[in-house]
Length: 194
Image (cartoon, rainbow, N blue to C red; front, side, top):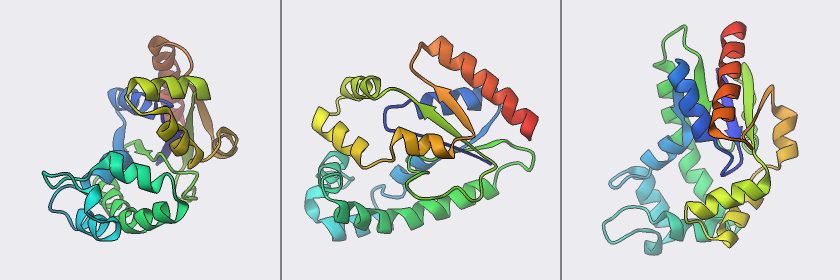
């Protein structure tokens, strides 16, 4: 069981995709977080009740941008959202982990691993690290306004806090080829430790 984490815009998704190509079994907390608030879900109903109709789009789905403006600007609001979604996310992650083959290298992609103090249960923690400026550039290319990117980064653990829990660091400041080469090394290390 490998915890994979890194700050927003660090490239965790690229790393997890590379690991899957090598044969890893992925449990993606971000993907599950989206699923637990899909239209018609109890999670979405609870979010709407807590934050009001302004966080729901006309088609009945979650307006992530509107919700993000609220929860990343106010610590209490963020904690309220987490109290709704985190139990749902944890339950679904546990179900998926239980479904993994017995000999699998399970990669648990968890953006807020450090913030949620979830170290127990992982054999190793892999941290994807990317310089702040590059992360901001990537987020801008994705269309996230600078003020929202800064707010989200401020709500996450620092690079130093992530390094403290890292068993393996993955530098993602170079090219995609550089990243793929590093992930291939990490995969061999994970197989060796398995």
